[in-house]
Length: 289
Ligand code: AAT
Image (cartoon, rainbow, N blue to C red; front, side, top):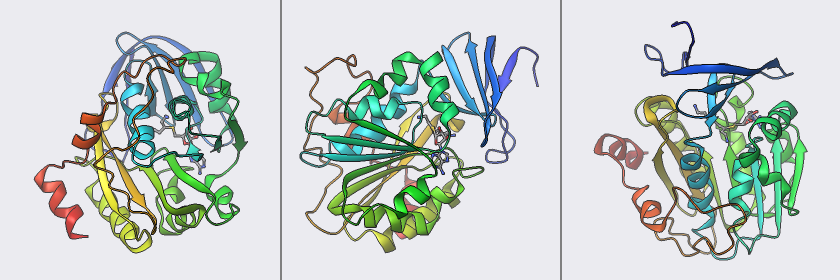
């Protein structure tokens, strides 16, 4: 550990640790679920850390939040009801709100402290909560989804932390079954699905579960996020049986004239299609499942 630097050390990426220089620690606390820290970094703006793992930085959060949101929402016409699991910082809400067809945005975040801290330190992220279509539920996403009537949502976005800690069940088969049940026919889900460089074994498991559960299409996409482990992170995108969804061909562009949340910084339709192109080593494993 280098004095004055934050190093992201975890058994999920043994033998490596990305580091950021700390200018100032702004908050340190412990919620019922995890340790919460915010610091000012020298080069990535403010950083939110949960249990020692970086959740977002001001500089590169756009790459993650825009992709996890617009990959699913731009793949179907007229999404109306959207559910976000996790994502308590509000960044995904901010992105969902760019879609004028959306009428209802529900979010289920387990940790109220993440919501409060985001409102205090990350106003350009937490701005997502200001949209009147948003309803916040504080609780476990697993339990919340079990109680959702079948066929409720057009899209579900699972902006979850890593599978060590409160998010563990969000990577397991019964959770994906509740997601499929809560979606309408031809509805879509996008889940945080880790790194092709570090977690091929986890991805393999998710893909094989999803192929059994989602009878529409099952795809893996990825993006670059410099402050996430290995600098990339992926998403599992699936649709339920019903009107077919071709995730690689976006049909529902973001309306950039409605720019109350500022312009898009990362997402465009070319990068949408490109996100589904996989390096050969990953393609081989994912296609074989
Ligand atoms: N948008 C920032 C990126 C995140 S945030 C993940 C959120 O999921 C956290 O706020 C966490 O409190 C919440 N969460 C964890 N478990 C649950 C649960 N069971 N139900 C509801 N919310 C939950 C993801 C960062 C990815 C990091 C990659 N290394």
